[in-house]
Length: 302
Image (cartoon, rainbow, N blue to C red):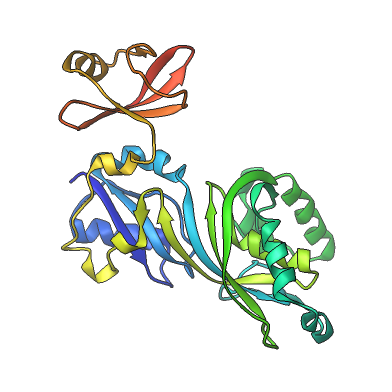
């Protein structure tokens, strides 16, 4: 069983919970997901089965869209409202009364573009072989908290946010909030965007709701619910790489590619992209290629 399944993940399940349920429902051992969603988040979780598991890295690199809500005026240790999260600070009412829609919109605009982003304390990134969330849970003193913050700075990285649009703003006390839509590249933490909006406004903030709307070409409108898994129809392998450059080749070139021979740039007239997909004349995906010094090397064969 080879193909892609788009699942609308409900709140309360981990991404691995969904993978396990898909494995049982469809009786397929080779199952993986293309990008984790936190347990409290909902929306698009792309599940790859069989030969499609070879395409997980390419899907993880795809752009994504989210709908997020941030509560302004409250900071938490996890940068969200996950069960067990601790409130670190609350802004005084006088500062919340000074919030305006214009100030909030300006803070959101600062999150668009190539931006430097510090990950949340509670994330799966590793420092010295240890997950950040494990290091964060082990913090007991102010000195340890300061040391962790210093380590977090070393994990700051440049991410791409292509656009942010405001869905709604509520200035009502005691819980002013903003709901916004984000179009971003890989590695973006929406929790960090919420946190940084609060820092810009000087009142703090944390994420209270997150729904993933799209991964690459896979949108939430295509997704099946958990109770529809058994009867779900899989999308074919080509759909998983529809966001990438591709080329269709003659039977002669297709045979060479299938035999594992590298191809010259002249053989495969593709744009100067680092990765590309190759199809035969029957529109079957036959290989994923990486570009290197005038040649296309086969990274994955099918």
